[in-house]
Image 1 (tube, one colour):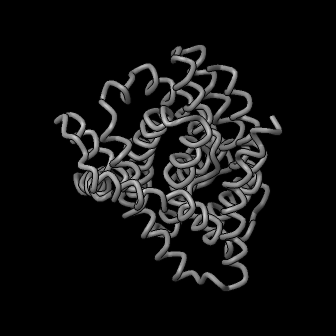
Image 2: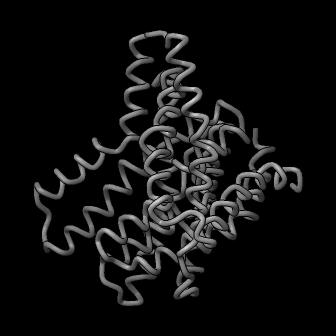
Length: 310
């Protein structure tokens, strides 16, 4: 277990380096925003395209995997929502708390970290987790928030969701990569070198950007943020494990990757949405800060637990 902790530690040290740079003012909010854009639109997209272009749809898509992840995630989503509604929170706030309980930093942290720690074969399961998060749960938060404000569902809401998916570079790069693979097109050497070099910037860039973005976040309402972090770091991987190992049995290796992905801390894009809709941004910010700090230990524990499975 300690050996796995030492393997994960460099990733969190880069996050810590970014945090320190942000706190000292060496990396301003504007600089962090531009670094995030570079990683999101270029480096991570190059990495995802290259990985997916070397995979087939059959290597990625598995109904048992999707159902296992959906069931485990939906259970925690429902649990956090129920607790929020018992506290008499509006539907939009309850939805954002539920989002904090289940949406991990799969794109910026999971893709680079898990493929290095668990092997290149992890990219297929990680991308499937990412796709489910983006298509199902990121769409759901927009539908709930917009619908609760308008008081009804409308074609405009579905149009907003559809455009959001089409404009997301992670969805686009994965889709283009799979299309490239389906056409059996080889990646020319210069193009492969270009994608490899650009994609190599995704891991340090993403982790540093995560740390820098946390520098100005404050742990306001720590009790609620702690509850949401507990769900994300402990309850979510536990329920996904139960679902993948018992309810919808998944092969050991992809099940292990799925559980590890579920153990990641709250994703930064939840805060971006919360700020955009002006719904509980401080609560979401605190959840990201607390869950990322605790994840230094819990992610190592979860990866150490799932490693013997395969």
